[in-house]
Amino acid sequence: GKSYEYIKVSTPRTGVGLIEIHRPKALNALFTPLILELNEAFKAFDKDHSIGAMVLTGSHKAFAAGADIKEMSTKDFADAYGNDFIESWSELPNTVKKPVISAVNGHALGGGCELAMMCDIMYVSEKANLGQPEIKLGIIPGAGGSQRLTRAIGKSKAMELILTGKNFSGRNAYDWGLAAQIFETPEQCVDAALETAETIASYSRIAVKACKEVVNKSQDLGVREGVEYERRVFHGLFGSEDQKIGMTAFAEKKKAQWKHR
Ligand code: CO8
Image (cartoon, rainbow, N blue to C red; front, side):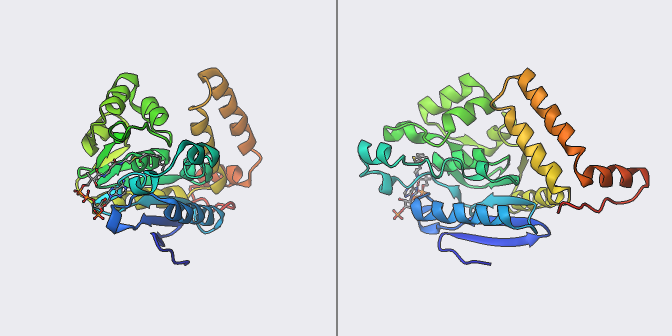
């Protein structure tokens, strides 16, 4: 595959694209060149027909310790607003159509926590240290933290975390429902994320894409509109060969050989 400076990209399992943030000197702090590489890698996997799901992780020490404070420190309003700072990064794993799982070990702070929350599923280890410490820098979360954390864990807890800037553990993230699973070690966390991604990648790409789309709609729509939206997409899948293939395979007690892979 292509080689990058601040990330590592590989395909360790069938149908799975792995992206590792790799800027060890700055605890994977996110800055423009790194974000551009992340964007490129996500888009390449999204287009690659051999890939069905992705995993995003960092190192054992840091998923990402936030946006690069040194890069940000000299920005003024005209630069931030005029160039819409963060706009190009803030939807990263969201704009891709294939599911992305974040495997969070070590620090996931500020923009790092936000990046983890942008992913479709979050796995953490006991070693994870998450938080939105922006208040301590005289700013606020800028890549969706105030919105996604609040949706995930409720207003009172999110408000407390964002106003105090206090970090929270992987255990907390799991107990509050922000993370889907918790693991003892970073290795187990990444392995499990890869395994889940492999499972997802074994299904019909069409059905997987539709699942991600309808679950994400629940974040924007009320329940009535959301259920209607889901039903329309559900109807649409009866036009895919994979619906016939999947149901016929069940009836014949065979393994489905998906057309849309
Ligand atoms: N930016 C720039 N450099 C950083 C960052 C960062 N966020 N975090 C760590 N580093 C650098 C340190 O400066 C240090 O560099 P050097 O060796 O040259 O001095 C190196 O990484 C190692 O860090 P420490 O020596 O501090 O390591 P410790 O183990 O003592 O501490 C901590 C680890 C607790 C994580 C500490 O580094 C820390 O508090 N970092 C800053 C965390 C933070 O405040 N993050 C939020 C930033 S604001 C933000 O993210 C706004 C979001 C905007 C949207 C982003 C969209 C994706």
